[in-house]
Length: 93
Image (cartoon, rainbow, N blue to C red; front, side):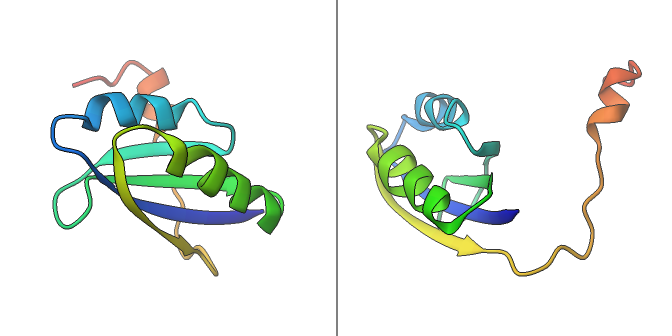
């Protein structure tokens, strides 16, 4: 499995719409709004490099409101904890 993080620069005031559109794309597992140079960080998990190319170039980069993106491919995960289980147990804020 290939994991990549796509850093996305979005037009002002378009973050919610862009994030929602990206979240619906196949291969996208998480979308986070963040501070700093980029507005969104997108986690992508796919089987092949060709699939990653499709998600980024034919999917993410085609969403209206995106100004720029940078893709970072992960080599190795040193820690990947599943936090969703806590939400299923009723541990909401």
